[in-house]
Length: 280
Length: 317
Image 1 (cartoon, one colour):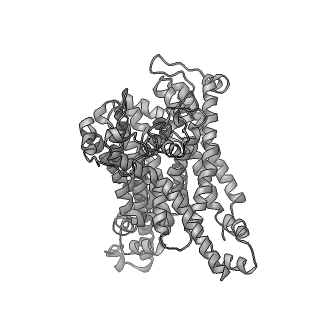
Image 2 (image 1 turned 60 degrees about the vertical axis):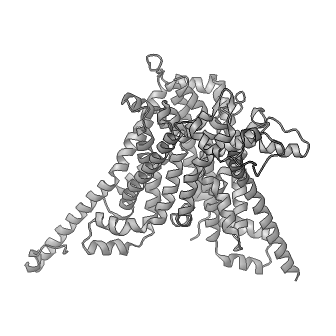
Image 3 (image 1 turned 30 degrees about the vertical axis):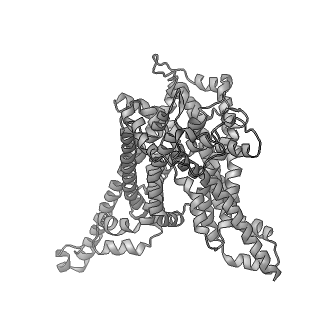
């Protein structure tokens, strides 16, 4: 009897702690949403309003009035993130499959060299990359925000992740495919690529997020507001008169939505992917 | 489709063997070709965007390269100046280490505690897991903007709650002593879900029988934690420690959004300093020297990781 009530108490404390941490983590999201629906005059109200009245839906429309280019910035972020994600998955799957399943001379040496790239901080290579891109006249367009992320450290992470995944697939499978006369391309495309969905989901979420929240690169490469991505466009809601918090929060909500959609759509596979690709 | 040419079927046994082996080596060569083809985009990218630039960064760090005046070779002068004369560099090192020293124990402690709380098979755990993981898949920029608003002096949620209890809250973001703890807290809550998932996966792999045996032997929960759980998840613990440490050395976005390095120089961290040197004052050579110091720090940590991994991390045979 004593044991059972102790168990009950233990679970009670467990739930209590989890509720407290979850609330601290979710409160800013709720605060962001409430503020985005407040009338500008109510933002500094005391006590704070959790349920704004009136609810000002027009804040969301006003974002586009206040910042006529907001839709363009949104589109820039979106197509860049989609291209980077697709590119990273393709390049990572090809090289990851080759390093895991194909035999060729110097394979392990090449893989080690590639892995060493993972420890080179982006912050070190960004200065020479910037100089090269500016000499090639590729500054102030989206090229440096798309190609280096695919073929740089993000891509190496993809290769590593997919190699880890393909290594766990039994040899019999690709040997059988080879005996049946499949070329490595056919083995890859027809058999191996479709199997890697959890690994792709994990990689896609990380890559999409990294591109979507990339701040340093656009800060350095992009100067004209037409080319802005969302992270740097956010500063437009602050001017010398102060910050339009209600509009900034509405913009923040809108910029969070695609990430959460991608995440919730792929959540199950994503968590499986973290477990199966040995990211632990 | 047959792998062998039709003529092989009519050939004498010895010839069959010969054809077969030459076929196999042809197959081998073909496979190798595919291998190189498959890895070539990534290898080229590595050469162009990583290996080349890292060499270039080193050469740059030995010059007085600036977009504002012609560049000259200065040897190790930049390094000498960074290490002996540059107070702001040492401030940024100090601030970065302060950030790491606050972030790492909080992040690892909290994520491990949460993973243990969540590892019980109880109703509702999935909801909590999702809630705590959500910030990981939220843009750091939005996260930093919202928290800056939460800690704002007048409109901020924190000070409004403090006001409810009759306490006048401080100007968090403008106080040199309070600003770094706030940035640390915000960074911990952003990433705690990632380490939590890694620990959750590791905890699932600990064989249940160990705990059963320990319970029969009368070991306390604490003893089970220190003698079974910690050693069994030590590879994950070590991995997250190094990843979190390396990540904390590169803190940047939340600094720009929340503090811009201030007030004063109180949140002027290493990468922020590199950014300002390179892209505000255009001292690209000098900035490269500071960046290379960051590279050596990360390199040293990575080497330590590989060296110590074998020594104190327990691996299940």
